[in-house]
Length: 312
Image 1: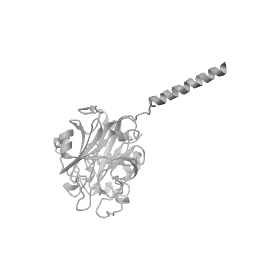
Image 2: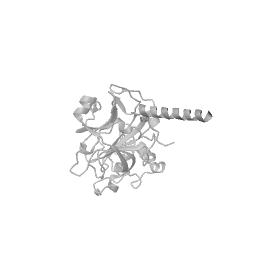
Image 3: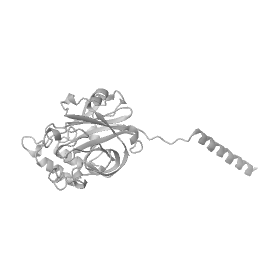
Image 4: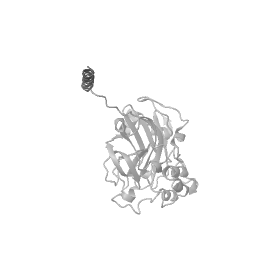
């Protein structure tokens, strides 16, 4: 069994009743008004508020899964230092990211104009890695080389003690060790260094499933009831990523499925994660048309008639 157990993380959490989707599955994070929130530390964005995530949230409607991000950059914005968002990863393995990486349990969404050559949209069978290690544009000198590099620089440390970083990726990966345990193998998590804690912030390879829709703050708040303000976690930019549920039919097994979602800024300046669960639609089975059934019935009658004639 993996050292990181998503089922254990989600256990004992109340069931939320969704206004649009009926009874929704149990979720971790902070539950409020049919949304599941992962609230990040407010001062751990390297470079200031522009490069700081305040939270990641999730809800589902009858037809869509919706993720919302609160931070300092809009989804279509690139900062003066050429920095934007990484990709949004969805780990359905029930275990750590190292186990899921490169398997059919890992999906991801490219939603921002980062330096990969991929189109925007949802991807399956994803292999992830550090954007700065395989992108066309070299960010050397502008970015963190690893997660350990980011932590050692001191962002978010408590009382000046770098080993007491808390709430590193939000509510569900709240300590430095929990974050290492989630992203990396047992060996790496036990001895993390700048050389082995690769930033998992971009799709290295995968197969596109379909397009996604972007939602603005007004739509999220007014139509869907998003409320980062309840946690004092409203960034200068809030936006949503909407996935049509039908895209996941056949990509993942149907039914209530646990996930861990995360995104890390392009150059590793901050990241946020959220554990939850979603109700994946069952894949529709092909049913023969009535005319086809009639054809099969006629064939059966002919076979029976032939056998009777042989017997006679």
